Image 1 (cartoon, rainbow, N blue to C red):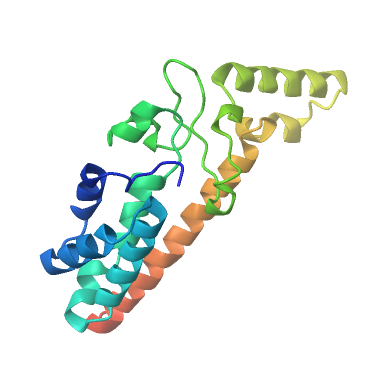
Image 2 (tube, rainbow, N blue to C red; image 1 turned 30 degrees about the vertical axis):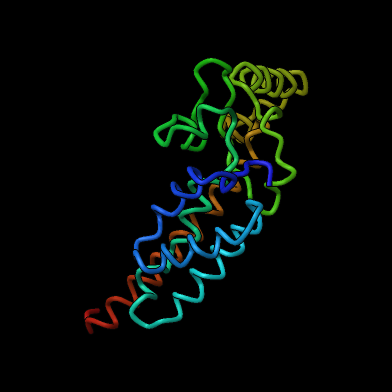
Amino acid sequence: GDQDFLGTKERMAKVLTLIPDKTVREEVERAMNDCSTSKDRWNALVKTVNSAAQIKNMKWKLKHVIDEIILQYTYPRLDINVSKGLNHLLKSPFCIHPKTGKVCTPFTPKIAAKFDPTTVPTISELVEELRMYDQKQSELNNEDDTTKRVKGYKKTSLNSSVHIFEDFLRKLEATWKGKRIEISDQKMEF
């Protein structure tokens, strides 16, 4: 809705280029032309692609089309330049925006609608959080070996973002391990 990424013929044409099969692409275009809002066009696109994916020889071609479109067009961005450019710096977790100093933080899709990019920490804020944590530990005389070994991110507001990213990586690794086992089973290699 807010992004209206299917709001014009030009925008629809850009999305359609991500559908690898010409016949399916034309079907999706016809279905979207019958709709008036981005939301309705999106629903028509999903329905048409999923329906076409049921055909045996299309399944592999269309398997990830919907996910790829979602990532490319609806992933929350911090500013308009991020939305326009596919090579923008803030595509990587924990990188720093050069002008604002804001840290690109991962979050779960469940909270995407509630996520407020203006609340992500800046480098200056993180440095201050580290200083405050260490100062508090010093005042409490808690500078034993375990306190000194606490990783820097655990002392800051980035802690939850790091856990979200680590969870994502664990799931990704499990998926890849499962895929490798499946491939080796097919090849009968162990």
